[in-house]
Amino acid sequence: MDYLAFIEQQIAELRSTIGGNVAINALSGGVDSSVVTALGHRAVGDQLRTVFIDNALMREGEPQRIVEAFAGMGIPVELVDARRKFLAALKGLTDPEAKRQAITDTFYQDVFGELVRKTGAKFLLHGTILTDIEETVAGIKRQHNILAQLGIDPEKQYGYRVLEPLATLRKDGVREVAKVLGMPESIYRRIPFPGPALAARIVGEVTEERLATVRAATVVVEEELADSGAFQYLAVLLNDFTTGIRDGKREFGQIIVVRCIDSVDARTATAVEVPWGKLHRICERITSIPGVNRCLYDLTPKPPATVEYV
Ligand code: XMP
Image 1 (cartoon, helix red, strand yellow):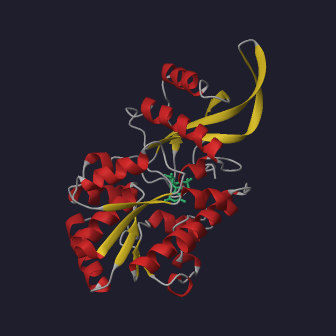
Image 2: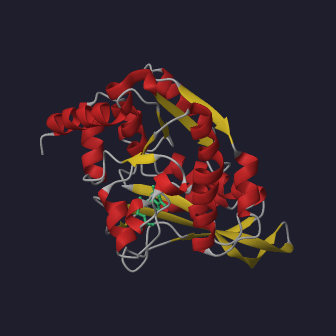
């Protein structure tokens, strides 16, 4: 594929569709929304307002890190603190689809809706890729970012039009586009991270406390597996308590699952043979997180499992 031609075509299309209007996009820091941000700014410059919504579900230090990285590329990103709203919407929910729905609704109707009204934006740029569409249409999972494919008209429902310039690409294609756009490696080499963020890695209720646990485990996994060359690695908090023993006393602790996979485009995946010594080190560090007394390594390929747990 000629990625340069793809880029030029998408920029031209965005420019003519957006015209003199204001467009808005939410940057998550993942490669998809990062590429959309760069394409959008090349197309319409300041007419595109890029926001980073802190939904309380982010990794350690992520909001600040992303805003700084884009400032380094000359792209201003506004940080919006919506942590309370998302936590309130997720309170008491345990069903995976209900959790995803709550995140979608809070994002589009509440937080984004308000920003759209404030900015007068007529267009929303979104980093939907082909795999998202295929899996949603196939009913495998409801990706949080699919609207039109589910028969939802965002113009009617939310008052803006969604533009998806990456809808014909898969993850490997998006990375190529990022490279051709001259984005830093720290962005296009990033491992994929789901839209629902750490909520996709908490089985059961998402609370501040449980987020802190999975966030701490994520720091460990990302540090320890950074040089693994794997497609993606993650930590998941299960919803069970198991018996353990600490300082000579019985304790009921939580369980963290570590997943490290090889994949080309996330449609299928296999578990990486992580060296035993590395797994021991990860286990030791994860079971030092308060309240966690068990650490498991997931060997399941996709299919039958998916990458994320929720
Ligand atoms: P699954 O869990 O569906 O994940 O096997 C496949 C790839 O997609 C990422 N993922 C998501 N990305 N919104 C996204 O933007 C989502 O709702 C979502 N769910 C999963 C996941 O991290 C993996 O790389």
